[in-house]
Length: 169
Image 1 (cartoon, rainbow, N blue to C red):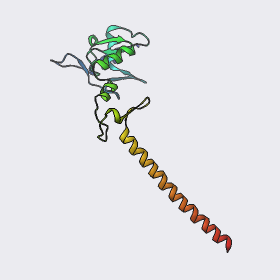
Image 2: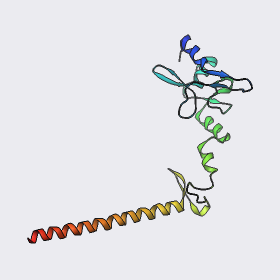
Image 3: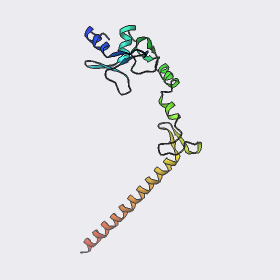
Image 4: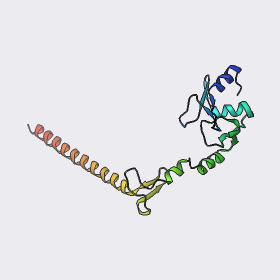
């Protein structure tokens, strides 16, 4: 990507170098995952990728720009390196930022039931599930369905009786 001098100047205007902090922090717009975002119409780019390209050169196709410092807002080029997706995920696991690490640290489900060996079911799509909560959900589902069915049967028999009376008259 090539940026005009005007865009480069605007980009570096969003970078703050604070004394005592090793990182150069992005002060512009942030994206959903906490990374800096820089808009060059009509496209949005991650700020750390632009910083890397401006100082170190083009990013090879299919590779990520990763942070050595584990600070998503850092755009300091010597804190950035090019790596594969596998390397990037490995870094996030080692830094304990990866979702799987965060979920593994939980000892109780959101309703407060302990994740003990007898109270856990593992599902590929959703991961760890609390069996107590699952039993409660199933019980409520059965109750709702049975109540619905009872109501439906009552209404159906009432309609049949009404239809039979109307036919007799």
